[in-house]
Image (cartoon, rainbow, N blue to C red):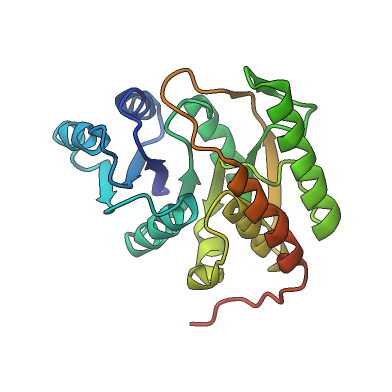
Length: 241
């Protein structure tokens, strides 16, 4: 049976973390979870520790000393997951903006031939609920910009709901990834694309969080804008053993 793990970065997610963990573990498929907590002052990590007693073999956590960025959280999780023998590694938010019920659909897309499956808000129109119209426009046209500049045939270039086949993460030099905020999502997709991996988009409905506080900021978009231009001129080579 394939070993599957969902990486969930957290910073102040006490309102959501227990519910998202219990939801994942209620699903069929024997999914494991790795929480990467960036020193949440609200006690998120303590909640996870309490749940580890109930799910000792399926719930894992790495506690970091401070808010070190989304990209570095995922890179830490990717390395840990590869070291521990997982075949499929997922990215998912803690706040239910990504519906855990869509996880099996991403997994199936990989089983059907994709190397990287993306939970896409934009491959079938615009499927976003409860976002302000300004944020929808910004997000949608950010993906249009990325697609145009990079020539990558992906509709949701900034998506953060994904399933990687192990071989993709093994091929990418994770230590060479440069963007640490939401530009990280673009860089990882484009690197996989340039290395020749097959990318599939699975339509999802993205629902804005109901509890907790968004971590988005204007600086996130600035990093992504300039980072995309740099990506255009970078050369990508498979990682060598």
